[in-house]
Length: 166
Picture 1 (cartoon, helix red, strand yellow):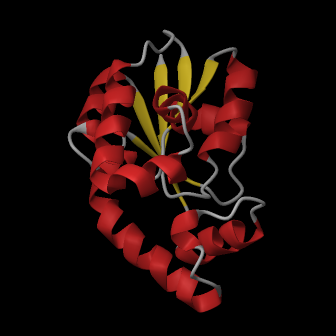
Picture 2: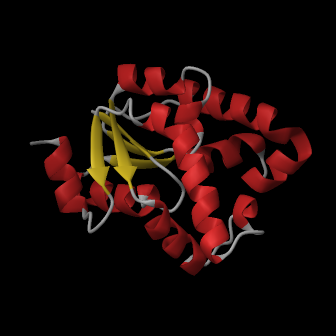
C-alpha cells in the first residue's frame, strides 16, 4: 500500500511519516528530498533560479515517475496536491491522508521550527496566521479530496495508523 501524506507545511507529514514507516516497516519517502536529488540543488535554490512554474512541473514529474516501493509512506510538499492532476494521481495510486491543522497551530509550529521556510520569512505573529489562513483557503478544495482527513492536533503514528488501517 502507498500512503500519501498531504497538508500544509508544518502539519507533521515528515515527522509522522517517518514514525509511521518505522512502526509499519514501510519505506519512508520524502518527496522534497527526491526533488532535490533530481534537481541537484535545494528546493529554494531551484525555485529562485527557475521560478514556481518550473518547480511545480519538476515536482509533478518526480511524484508521478518515481519508482516507489510497494509499501511506502510518502510525505509530499504542502503545495503538491494543488497542481496539475497530482491529487487525482495520488488517489489512484494509493491512499491519501490529509493532516489538518488550524492556522494558529501551524503558525506556532512554523515559528518554532529550526528551518525558516523561505516563503514565510517576512511573516511573524498574526501576519503569519493570516498568511496561512489564506493559503489554506486556496488549498482546501484540493486537500479535501483526500480519502482520509486526520486532525493533526495530538496525532501520533499509532492514531494515524488506526485511521489508515481500521
